[in-house]
Structures are given as C-alpha cells and as structure tokens.
Image 1 (spheres, one colour):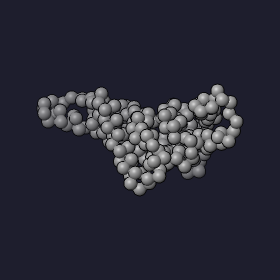
Image 2 (cartoon, one colour; image 1 turned 45 degrees about the vertical axis):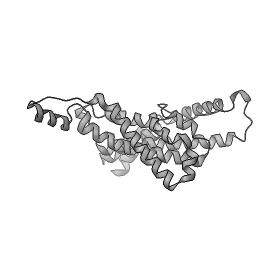
Image 3 (cartoon, rainbow, N blue to C red; image 1 turned 120 degrees about the vertical axis):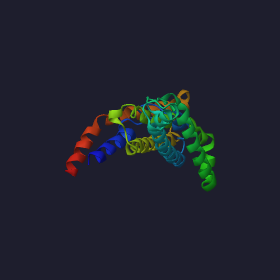
Image 4 (tube, rainbow, N blue to C red; image 1 turned 180 degrees about the vertical axis):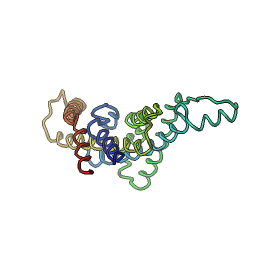
Length: 230
C-alpha cells in the first residue's frame, strides 16, 4: 500500500505539480516548436513519453549497477583485477551514458514512426530527431541518478519509471494545452508586435502560473488515497 501511494505521489508530482516544462522549464524547444496543431503536439508528447520511459529504464539500470558510487559491477571488476577491496565511483561518466541512451531511444522511435506513421513523421520535421536534445529527458535521467546517490534512500526501478511516465504525461498535457490555445489564437486579432513567438511565450508564462495553483495538492491527494485504501 505504501509503495502504491509513493508511486502515485511521484506520478502526480511529475505530471502536474512539478511539471517538467511549466515548473522546471526544460524541454522548451519542442514545447514551442511542435505546439502549432493539437494532433501533432499529442503525437510528440507520446513520442517523448516513450523515449523518456526507455531512457529511465536504461539509465536506472546503468546507474544502479555501474555508475553510482559502490555499484556492484565495477567493484567486482576492481576486486577481480587488483585483488583489493575499494569503492569505485564512475558517476563522472553519467552524462555520456545518458546521452548515448537517449540518442539510441530516439533513433528507435524515429525509425518506427517513419515506417508506420509517415504523415506524422513528416509533420514532426526536424523536431523528432531533436528529441535527443530535449532537456526534459536528460533532466529525468539526472533526477534518477540523484535518487541513487544515497544508499539509504535508493530508488527502485518502479519509482524511476513512475517519474519518467509522470514526466512524459506532464509534457504531453503541457504541449497539447499549448497547441489548443495556439490554434485558437490563430482566429484572434493579436497585436503585430506580439504576433508569433511573443504571444507564444506570454501564453506559456500564463500556463506556468496557472499550474502553480496545483502546489501542495499532492499531500491532500495522498491523504485521500490512504483513507480509501484503509
């Protein structure tokens, strides 16, 4: 029960309360570049959710078994080679490993979308390969790494995946809302100095302020879920 409540807390926090785009302001490039049409924005959100989930799975595995201080695999190799005990810290390689993982996941998604959804692939344009540089995905990987630094509070794979799925869902919500608003703005009379990027940035700022209203609701939701499960 406690595990379920923890997972719900992580998902709600990453999706709504601490939305990656509207709270931490990461992943702004595709958020603004692909939010012109709702269908394209939703497709991009699904692609990012898939990539961020795969990246979280692989980054947790590499971090837990190889990169973090005291990871079992490098310690076993060190003991085998040198015959001495010692703590091995390969966290300096984390950025290189995460970028490789993200790039590989994006390449797989690009091949799949190009093969089975050619119209969606054409509508994405350059922004599909640019998922590789989407800071939201790297941010999720770094958050997972941060949760694996303390041996007493290690995150399991289920918690890492909950953060990734919640972050991907939050990205999808944010970019779809933005696309819906921008579609409506096309029928509005926007002052010429604010047309284009100006009104888009103002809209994104208003959305971010709106999402600030969810601050603190996670505690109430967790209490309600706990009462229902008792």
